Length: 475
View 1 (tube, rainbow, N blue to C red):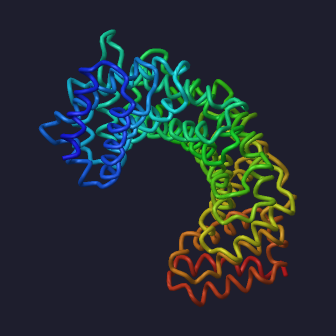
View 2: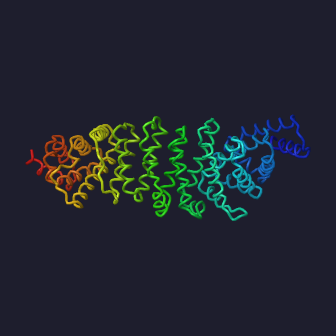
View 3: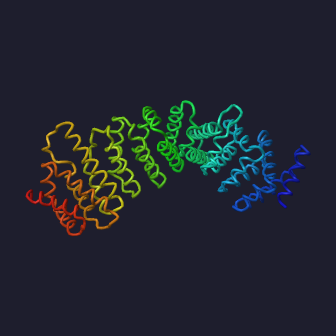
């Protein structure tokens, strides 16, 4: 009944071609009622499919006319209705929306993105929200992006350029209204969903692909570093991470050749950030981005990143940040091009010891880090033919205490960290100068003895016994 009433009212308005406040108010009231029902999932399918899509087609035709005229309450309600229909609707419903009336929704969105600078913020909010709703489903995202328009340009190119333009337009200090924040959230989220699927890259980055990827990442990093909204910073950094993890090797090398590492160092080093969970996630995503790009990061940049990570670990107590930064540091140290060991402070090792003692979930990450350091030291000793008279940094008391804690963990889920900790000690024992400081740590010997008693595996037990026999004479 409401649909029939709307169709009759809309037809009267179109035929009269004149302003009637009473008729306009009636149409607005009808559409607002329809929007209430459109929040329900079954109703979305009903509205989209009724009369084989005829109702939806008429609605979109009305919108295509109204967006060329000064905005009215009717237009805003029509747009809001379409946005409601795209929100959490099914794949089939979204496909119907895109194909309705010969793809008129494509034309509305493309027209909108061609006018982003001149359009009101409220309209930009609608455009970015609808795009985000549509691209949440990978199949719909590909269908949406791959459509070719008259000049043989993919819709995806125009959409990504438009989203980026809107994002940067609202990233200025003068654009901090609540509506502006919504627009940036929509745009960063839509970009993240679009670029995270590498199968979309041939569509999005056809010509000068590396240049386009670099510009996209660079501008997103500016947002991730400088925006006042922590949610927007998180979504921008997530988009960078998605792109870094999904792009090809050649693109990664090109991107790193453009010195994006400095922006990542800035994000890893920012002291004023990371006051809430969104900012914690920014740092985690930044660490994952570094890991994705590690093989193409230059040596000098790698040193700066490692320094930033060490400093972050020195003071961090957050349960989500500690494993992410440790894992990232471990990956950087393990990189083949790396030939410099970071400078570790006593604060760093004290925090590692404290973290290991209170949270067994980080044991695997810590054991990976210590193994990476042990292997790097061994490799540097061989390359430089260095005098092995100086004990390893891993023989310092807080480090050995951390190793002992991981060796003593009886939980079967920590077997990986436990076995790797034993292997680390075995590597350290290859250097004679390491034996005495290791033997002087009573906790280590006690831990090794306990491991022999509790460990059923013959190989592990024999390794522990062999280490004990070498350490005892050093006492």
